[in-house]
Figure 1 (cartoon, protein in one colour):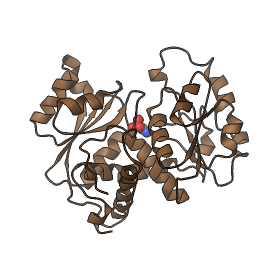
Figure 2: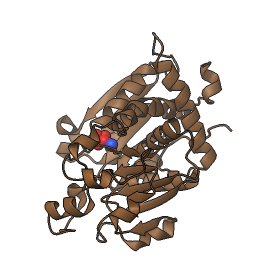
Figure 3: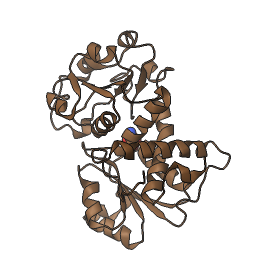
Figure 4: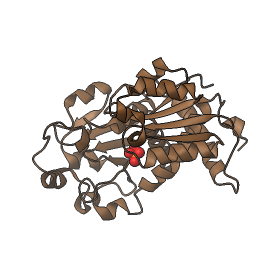
Length: 313
Ligand code: CP
């Protein structure tokens, strides 16, 4: 199939074929990244603006590096030194970036829907790098890429997402992607953070962590998103850790080939035991490595790239 979208705003609206095309293209870009010369001229003469209105380490840096690897010009927008601080609206900021001939805007924003809004007010490609609690599409794509790379498939796997689901854009994008690709998804955490309404998406919801992890092929841990919680969702962190963290006792009971994932940033000792985060079955840093190839694939396809065949690998 050919990619025909101008924007990447969410996973919900993508088909399984579109997701597979991104993953296949990312696989080719990962091979490019293992060559002596890691750059390709696919985006020569194009300008990518990283418009991050919320903090980020992994997503911002890997989009920046991905654009450089594709030979694009990259501008990193800093909120603190921008005119957003003087009351300029997001719409006016984006229209000024468009007037400066930006070709792609990668936006992270605390407001759900901000990328969709931008896609309606500017005539450049918009990529959602995380919007509030809504979606984080490239995180789900790199997670799916990592699962497929490590397990050889996604269809039929049991994936457990454990932690703060309600406030997590990573969870929502992962749920859409994994279900479209044929995995079974179980969500677990305190009932205040994992409401039964998620069953309507096609997931299993449980508040029993031992049940959630016993048959899991993949355990994806999420941190508590304090920055989005407007009230106390559980008594205290110590109780959360006792009841829901992946500690050594629970780890000893999971399947011997189960993989541990986390989108980062990790809160060591809260949702995951520090040694487990660094153990041989943790693929947390592989996720980061794969994020670069996935973001190269996304930039390439949105710029008119046809797919992996065009890369000659
Ligand atoms: N996983 C993720 O989005 O990390 P950052 O917030 O550091 O980009």
